[in-house]
Length: 115
Image (cartoon, rainbow, N blue to C red):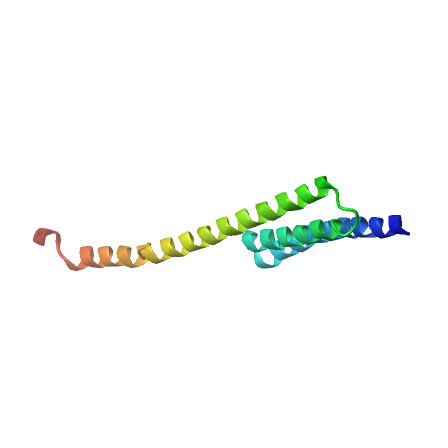
């Protein structure tokens, strides 16, 4: 009986890991946002790892889950920093089409002999 109870979470965690890949690919295809797809993948992998700990946890399983959680936190922190950096560069970037229009208009309206 106890061997069955320890085998079920292991099998279920494999199904959740496979579902994580499918869900991440679907999210990437639907939204075209790799950061969102990566977040979904890592969250579901954490869930699969925690499910593996339901049975008889070994030190290897605990270490694997700890590594996945650490990677998930590092990636999430990196994505937040990248998003903040991206927003700052978008705000600082001048509008090139407007500047080009102003240069062309200035060049056309001001004769060459007045320069």
